[in-house]
Image (cartoon, rainbow, N blue to C red; front, top):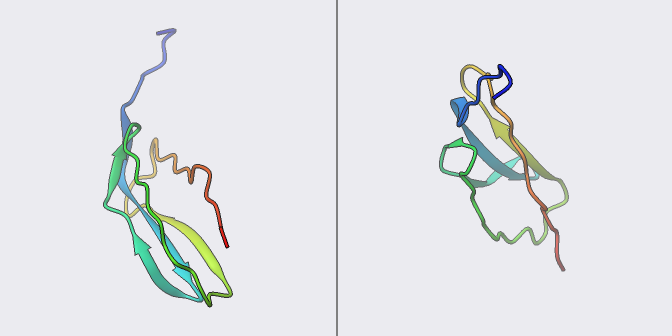
Length: 74
């Protein structure tokens, strides 16, 4: 593997969060492995400010967080 160390996931579990107008609307289970995925649907009716956040409470080593194809639909 060309001298690189392959790792299956982050050193610390990541938690994905969705906030609407500063209020927590959705919270994922902790994810740590590359193959972990969370699908969800959520009503954001009457929300003016939408925020997608990721929380990593410890070492950020190998912590790659990706929101894949988030969509806001009418």
